[in-house]
Image 1 (cartoon, rainbow, N blue to C red):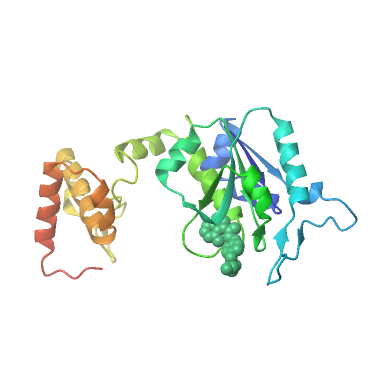
Image 2: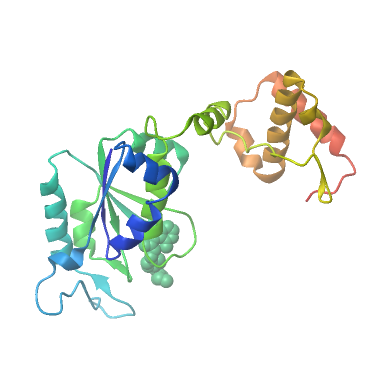
Length: 252
Ligand code: 9D3
């Protein structure tokens, strides 16, 4: 997959995508990332990329011309068709199901705004989709682009190592339920001990305990996820049993 990012801070993107799974996916050529700076396409000694908003008010607006010249260069660099995705608080919140769809594309172009935003005429004519990270205020789209890049890169075939893939497989539909708790050495520690069942060697009992913990935590922390998760009769029994066991225990 090829991802082009239009941003006034291309170093930001290169840095956040250089390490870990995304860096490895790039080294393996499963994924290529290209940053483009509209300032490089701005005219004049000052290379202006923004100006004051018509109608007045605070802040600046990103100009059409440098963005259009930059996007033309991005399109010219590769003939593969690609949707332009604008990171913006007005977008639809990102979900894992949209991430899966984006990960299957051969290419996408991520557009990052700064200041108050981008001239609406450019957005209306060039943007295919707007995506938000959620209902809080960021200072630009770059973190959103980095989030999409990370989420999409790790879904490329061969991007995860064996352990990471196994962890993903065991977590079925991914994000259907919250994860169970994890423990490692030492079994006894001043901060507490590892649950007995995990040291029992009884794999069926361990799988059951983990499933039960996932169900219980989802019910406690994100009950709305349970409405979507299609629980089996066995799951419902596990959850009911866990809830009985909780009676009288304080919730963290
Ligand atoms: C305080 C500025 N706001 C005036 C009411 C509007 C505003 C403009 C530009 C708010 C945020 C931004 C910059 N944000 C992004 O580019 C952005 C973002 C976000 O702020 N929240 C969640 N997801 C995203 S994706 C891109």
